Length: 185
Image (cartoon, rainbow, N blue to C red):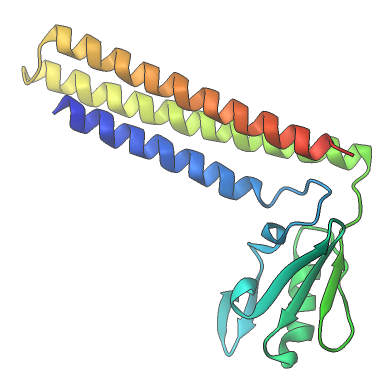
């Protein structure tokens, strides 16, 4: 019973970490990365589909992303969606390929991206702490209902706290790594 609670809570914490990593892909670092375009969806025959499902995405050099749609009629649609995004990118097309130059962000922009990344990290930590709170309340409920002993309850609460500490540190490490990546010139 306690093992089930611990396993469930740890799985939720793992999902929180995975979600954070996905979110951080959308934060620019100055290097061209096709993951910048992960959140862009285009209208393809009435359905909004991810850009990667209608085009080949490449980074031929550290400052450029190329998008080669499988259907050339999508070029204006893709360009419009990229410009509408909050990425601040200006795509150029030659009729077959869309080239997206990735400008080096200014110092001020870099600091703003770091703030965004740190905010995402804080949100992940809050989610992890909420998971801890839920797990501890389940354990206390089991103790109150005499399903587990007081000693087992204390041990389980300590285990949840250890898991929380482990995953909060993981969030800190991920954010530190992203900050270094963003501030790298």
